Image (cartoon, rainbow, N blue to C red):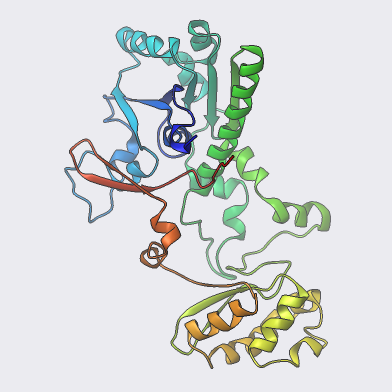
Length: 360
């Protein structure tokens, strides 16, 4: 079966705005589900409709930001503070398989959109609820607040400079993945038992669950990760950036001893692995600055393309630091662009949220 038809026949009601909840809705719409997005007409709909770049048309109904996670959805403007509006959504819920909500617990109760209320209209319903800090905490937040609260902001950026947030709302996207996984488990369980379910996650829990090695560096070694730019606290050279003769940048990720030795050989520095300061990864992490002095001089002997070809031919992980234009010059990126016409007939584009294949 084609992925674009995988969830054909599934009906999703999206009572969510901004990024995380709508990203979950788009996952299902990309895979063929009917996704009905409910927006508030009183406030002008999803707030991201108005999050426009300076060069976007002021009078356009939607922004590029809104387009990024709202693809192939049927939009309905419904005032949930009215009896008629609530009745309209209840009718949708009776036929729905999944509802996605990012209301606070208090607002969901006030609007008649809580799990208990909607499950009363449809016991087979899977209610997917996303909050910022957990269901018991009535605290609103956007992604950057969670980047701060979950430790990402503290360890991001360059040493001695102000923290720097990630340039995408990554916590929202991580939470969207957590919620999708929970929904898929609930769908599997419903297939087995016929029962609906309440699925929930928070931005905070999703962010903490993704701290990975940075968390264990603290939990096991008592090390508080510090700002290091793109460098890695446990590996060197990894994330280190070098300029080439044509003033273009490459990033290196030599994660094994063999890769480091091969890197040195490629750069005509065969003696470096025998230097006590660089003979082991632990020593290289300790003496990163001295190591990078040697590597930086050698990279200046090559253009970026020359260096990249030499390194990749010897299977040394390295990459070009590309701007967005350069990213979408790559065939793989071009193949991930989805297009549709907006409400005014304008051509809109975004990238797929589904980046996997299923065969067999």
